[in-house]
Image 1 (cartoon, rainbow, N blue to C red):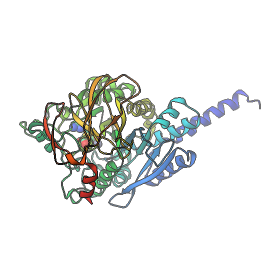
Image 2 (cartoon, protein in one colour; image 1 turned 90 degrees about the vertical axis):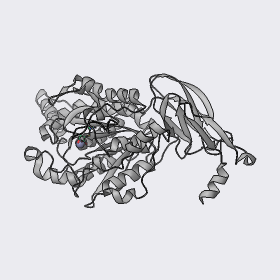
Image 3 (cartoon, rainbow, N blue to C red; image 1 turned 60 degrees about the vertical axis):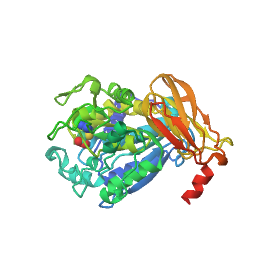
Image 4 (spheres, protein in one colour; image 1 turned 180 degrees about the vertical axis):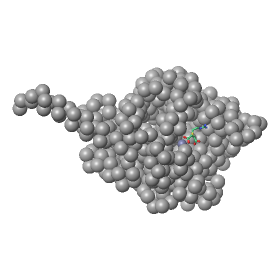
Length: 452
Ligand code: GEM
Ligand code: ZN
């Protein structure tokens, strides 16, 4: 077919038009439609599920991307993005819809980078954690939006102040020697949180997420934990004081991975604020208790950062395409960060995976645990590390691994079961991070019986 210059131009114009038609604010029904459209377009690499409902009964939908959607593939890390936790901070919601459409299209186009990402990673995308708040904000629209209208859930609770405060426990443990990971929840936590928080916590517990980001607006910066300041001497509304985690260097690198792949975040000057490299420690900005980011790190294996993506919390539709283009590369680059450090299998002598084995890295006082299949993922910067795997009923094992940039280094552990006759024996075990533990070794079989 011969196309004249005129019709070619017309076609180009049409393409342009259909592209910009995609950039609009998605109300709840539009969001649902957009996600199911993607699922329809890319049925073999996607799945849609709801983690539960909001107070007003809207679903908190997740779209999952994987070459085997719906199941955890051993040694493939799980990643998540959460948007619109504050109902009036809407850019994250729109970017995550765009991202879902982009992943589907590029996979169909045979884009090698995206194909590999989907083959090696299980990606969970939840565009809105606060769909009720969003509707309140969207009723006002971009121009008339009051600064905080729709931020909270429908019960007027700020969901980023609604998670159990595990920092208090952790800061106590750091001083007094105690657990450095998976800080337990208060017994009655379910009665103390909002519905949206509850289902999100259940979600976090039911997948072994490794890396995550939580998308906000009102500034342009990548914010990393802790959000809650350890320095309780300063009084007043804005208590601050840099409070890093034991993984501080890694978190800085993760935050920079986003800010430098972003169109302008890394430049530092945005919205009248200056953040060197476009990153900040949460507590050094202003202290925040009961946030979601710290909760991820303290209760699960997941490392989460908080992305502040626009000065204007509710940008006009005309700005959405530019924002997407400014964030696209960063959103992909950040997912790829899940493939660094070490990963491997913890098994028994019969090659059965051991769940909940504890992986400790010398010099970093934050352990991670293996998932149900015995696979673990430990994000680490390039270096050589001494790593210990331990599990109830087994002798602990130490190994060395060198991490280089790029793909994660494989490090497996096969653990020997403690004989039943030794079951009451107390084996002193010196934690590599200098703490003395007396580990009571109980064989798994005994342990299991006890729990029944
Ligand atoms: C923040 S979250 C990011 C900032 N964190 C800290 N510790 N300063 C909030 O929840 O207040 C900002 C937002 O709402 O987007
Ligand atoms: Zn926010």
